Image 1 (tube, one colour):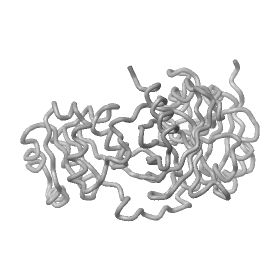
Image 2: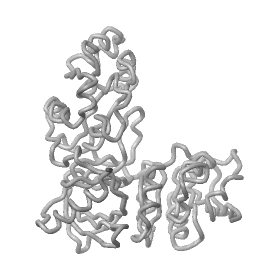
Image 3: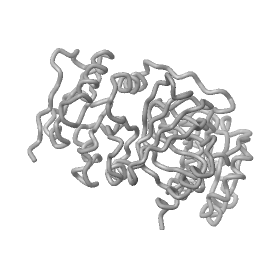
Image 4: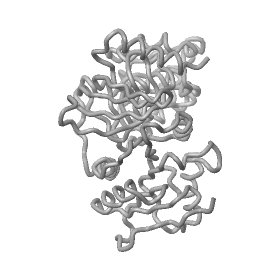
Length: 371
């Protein structure tokens, strides 16, 4: 299939932030164009992923990339990862535009390539504008209350912490913000780079905390002074789920409500709204994991921490639409976090599910659980 032309909108201000749409001209493109122009951005359209390959390197890099689900191919040079490299958008969020019946394998491929949000068709201008406003800092988010404020955890000497079953992955799923140091020696410099006191230091290896302190500069020492620490062995790191209660005790948080250690990969488009259905303003995201107690959603515009939400899960394998209520346990809105590792999105704890729906949910978790 031949590459389609890149279609810029004429008359935009030079140097304006660019928004790239990969897909055919249609209602989604028109909504994106109107929202982008309203915020002083330049919308650009390419009919297929390969259509942006010849773009001039002198053009400004896209601030946001939206891709229709039919453009998602197998992983590799022709996939989404290749697309971001071709348009110089390595730092730009990638948003999938999906339909409720988008195949599960497409969602899984998009998840593997780092999709950070999902718009469910029909796409609204308000949904696009909300994401652009968040990226451009035009819709500041009020800091959460102390009860929901994220905790910063430094993992030192835990190079494998971000594997699916690793401690780092579990802590991110709990809503904590992490600083990783592959070596104990680098832990103090990571703290100094971040410039703020962590709430907890977890060090792999006996006696390693002394190594962190010995190599710390005066600035890092001031930031580390009085920080609770936990030293764990490699064997304990391999049993990450068993460490969570100890970590949350030191952080002063209840981390059991989402049962993150029981979560399984689960990809489906999710619509959500704060409050009840009637008169609610709906937006969307994409689920990337689910546990018997909660759902983990990637989106650039999560609901407020502590907010009651209504969920619509579009199940690709069965074609069902599962509705549920929940409360936002944590939320990471779109923001510059510099050295912190924290996924955009939110963790939602299910509320008010009766036995039949809970049984159905457990069956879904078991069906998607890796063998």
